[in-house]
Length: 105
Image (cartoon, rainbow, N blue to C red; front, top):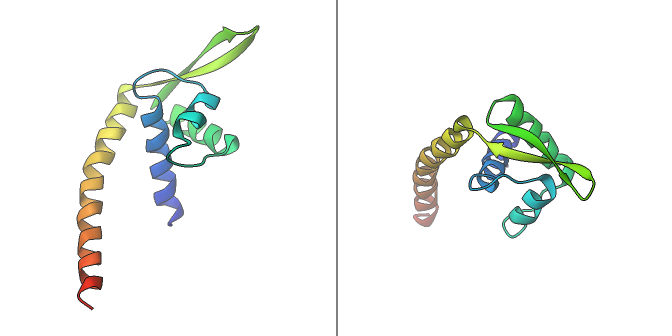
């Protein structure tokens, strides 16, 4: 898979994982596990990129005597999910065209 495409897909997946409630790294990985495998190092790179882009914010909460970073999606992040949904319709249309061509061979 094209690396840029995969990167964009993973970004949207992480945003979707925190869309309904704030979450922390380990929980995000756990929530995504039924759908895809993601290493901690990959996740934290994505989270930092999304924070820099203004698509999420970070706040710390004390948990069992240590600080845990929680991630919160912003309006920009929610907008990115909606943009992805629209883009995906076009991608599915292209996929159907490609598959149709293969079926006719």
